Image (cartoon, rainbow, N blue to C red; front, side, top):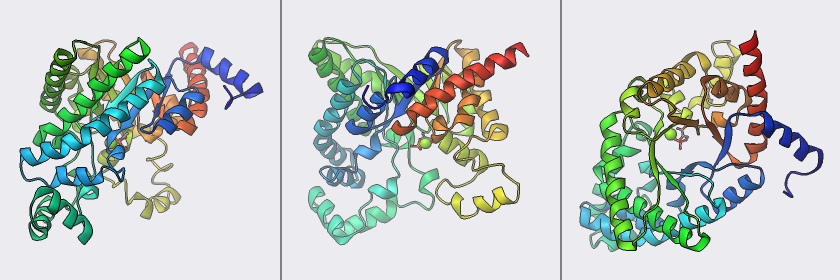
Length: 366
Ligand code: PEP
Ligand code: MG
């Protein structure tokens, strides 16, 4: 391990003997996945697929998909995206070589996919065989006052099922290709974002299962996979007992959960949060260090209710808090199975997880 050597590597070895929490990484590029693996990541806990869609070679097809007014138009665009997306997953499965890879289906900020510049409008009009004025109207139709509380996450997968179908196909085809190459099949963990109701997970899970059956039939190969959900809305926490019935795992999206529990925009919080911390209203920035009293209580409720339905249900965290030592101590206390953080935080997370395990031991004997 060239990136961690000498005394530091020894220290990390001790930490690994002590810790209970697994440490994964948030990664969607091969570079991030490789870096995290060198730092000791034990899998990918969150691959944000929307980031892949901004690649200059495919953003045109992405705009075409969003702007198409019918399923046929979307399917044409998605057929253009499938080979890219399949290759994305092949790369990640190869690098992670059998370690778990959690792939989150599209959770876009829809407004970032909409064409704005004249050139973008012209390009998408041409791709869809229509005119710029029609595209301006469509973009206005899709624009939202509050995109972060709007048509995102599984809501998009439910209104436009062909999007999640394309992604599921790319995952299964990619996994089967890598299984043949490495002689060992990756076990994809497919994750549905922004679920607030059990039915949303039932519908999207059925989409994934349908595609799995198709791909396995076409290729004559079946592989194992699991389907789980992000828990990032208060409603998901409260109804976690019901959601757990159709989930193979939970992953706490504490960025959105903090936003929605506080009713505080992730994107604008910086404007007044420092003053709030100065005034002693908040002990620290809740988007950095988990607010144990409020957001943490929600996590606890979800974990308890989820386990009441499914004892031993696998649970992790993939919000930014997964790389924050104080928040990691909380994750240990709630009994999560893993934390997932950005690649460069993996070593800190390994140490913090060990410290948390020791701390939890002290509490038990006290
Ligand atoms: C989260 O909400 O905590 C999360 C991990 O997802 P994202 O930051 O992509 O919304
Ligand atoms: Mg989120």
